[in-house]
Length: 322
Image (cartoon, rainbow, N blue to C red; front, side, top):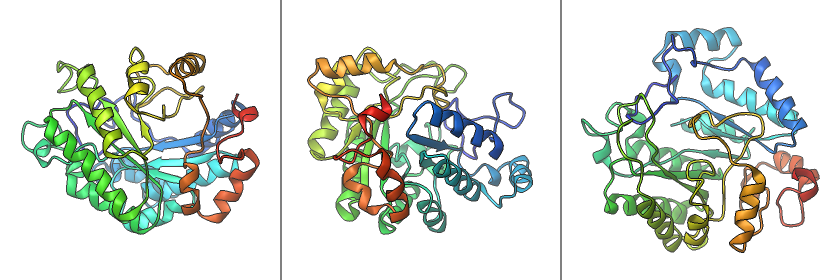
């Protein structure tokens, strides 16, 4: 559940929907234990935008579970992940500075998609009109606060949701500017819009392949040293194009859970991703949710937990993940 209503989102649910869910801590623990048996490395926590501010049902549920709000719930869950030997990365929308500080203690990195720096996309009739958290100034403020707190951040943009080419480029430059000021953007994600049945934009065409690939290349030109990701399941026929355009990260692939945000797009087989990467001259590696070059921003006690699984390059040992 989420206080925002974006025109393209199928992840959002109303309280009466069958898919509406907040996982009890007991279920989170069960999944974490299963994840460890499958040699998972990352526990990705994703929630809607401050659902307790819109739905009394969420406030009641959180109180019954023993939490004052979503951030406190996530801090508990991410501590459980650490206790089970996984490493948390939380993406919970526009967190306040005190909430960022709280989650820094139990997460090796955090995430917040900028989505777009265009205020036009929040105007009436546009994708973010009913999504106050997607106003660019609000998102940029959160990312700036994370920079002041020295938190490794993953951010990114959605491509093909109605932005112009100039607005897409402006969004890339806005992320570059943030990193130049604070040095904390560890990765950017370029996500191509895919129409979701049953949404307001469900009949819109998806992002054109050439336009999206151009966006990837422009991001690499603008940020030569940045880690750039394209989600591994949204464009399974275009892997080679993205590798040649400049990505160096495929994002997470889970052996036990679907992509809850894009459930109709299954995860690819690791063997296929590995083969396509090798064919393009690359070697597939497993990383922690924090890149090696940003690990010094992570609290020392969390860094020490990574050491038994870490190779000489700061990545996950090959014998563990394979």
